[in-house]
Image (cartoon, rainbow, N blue to C red; front, side, top):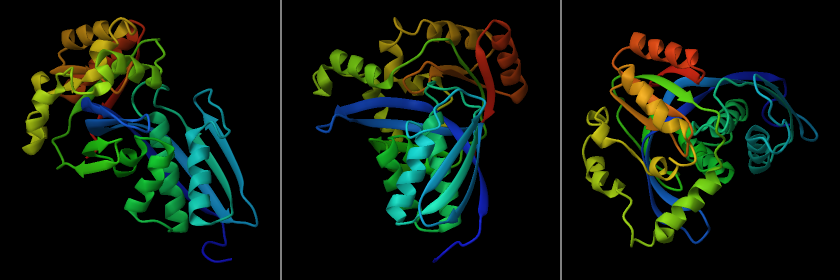
Length: 298
C-alpha cells in the first residue's frame, strides 16, 4: 500500500470560536444563508487524538470522554473521518479519542471544531490535501468547519467558506458562560427569516451600518461595544432568557463588552486582564452558570 503503512498518532486541539460580529446578508436558493461574521479562536478547546494506518477496508472507532454524545455517523468527527477517507480514496483503520471541554450546542462551534481537528489530524498522517482542499471538504460537513480549519481571526462570508484572514490582534481575555437553554440553529434561522422577510432587503438588520469597518482595521475597533453585533441576539431574547442576565452579570464584573456567540445561548465577556476574566468565571460558576475562562488564540 502507498503512504503510511504503520500506525501513526496525531494530537490536535479543537479550539472554540466566538463571533465578534455576526450578520445575515441574504437567504440562498439552497436553503442556507449568506453571512458576514468575524470569528475569533479562543483557548477553550477539546482534545483530539487520532491514530491511523492504511488497511483493506475502513474501520473507524470513536471514544468520547466528558460528554454524552453519539459515537456514530451523527457525530461530526465520524462524518469528517469518513469524508476525508472517501475524498482521498483511502481505506484505513482509524481510532479517535475525543475529550470534550467545549459545552455542547452553545454557539461556540464545538462540533465544527472537532470535525476540523479530525481533518487536520488525518491530513497530518496521510498528506492528501492543502489548506484550500481541506476547507472545501470541511464545508461539506458544516458551515463553520472552514474557519475552524484556519483559526485565529477572520472575516467569513458566503456560508462561511469565503475567508479573509485578519491580522493578529492583542490578546483578549474572556469569560464565557451559558444557561441551561438548548438552541436549535435551524430554528433560529427560521425565526430570522420571518423577521426579515426572508432577507429580501426590505427589512434592515442593523448590522449594515458597521460594514465600512471591514474596509479598515476592524480589530482596532472591536473592543468597543458599538462595533460588535449579533443578529441572533435580539431575536432570541424571548427564547433564551439567560442571555440578558448574563450580559448584565458580565458588565457588573467589569467586562468591557459582552455579546452572545453564534445562535447562542453562550455569552462571552471581554475583560482587560486575565485575573478579571478568571474572577468573573468564578463568580458566574458560584451562581449556577456553566462558565469557562479563555484567551485569544493568536
